[in-house]
Length: 175
Image (cartoon, rainbow, N blue to C red):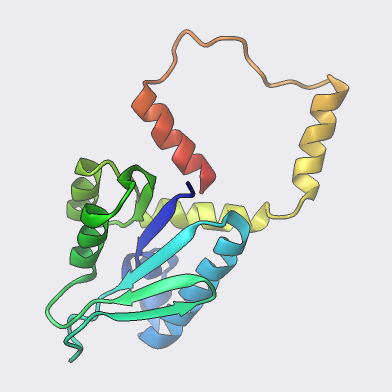
């Protein structure tokens, strides 16, 4: 089952440093475009949540652009609360990867076995994925392994990480 990314939109915009010009619509569109490109590379189910608590919307707003699901919270409700609802009510919570810089949301998600990644760390992973999306890099690695000249494989590690830590690292590696 593929991982499901749930992203706090304005936290990630802040990690990119896009909040300088205060044109929120343009900043949201830029971020959604980057996430759409990332989805093409990684094939994750991506949901981004934006604060809409200052708007006059009585209901949550839903949209889908470039394969990215977008949720705007309703009046009086923050994106953090929407993210908590998604994680709490979600099936297969261990497949959730929540991107937020908010410690309260991170602690809540950890209690429900969701993996939490800071916005800054996720931004770096997105940029790396876009750099290494070409097949040239993977072909080079295969040729080294086939020739037998360079091998990074190790046989047994006495300092093996715990099962939980290995699960978390495996999910983070997929980013």
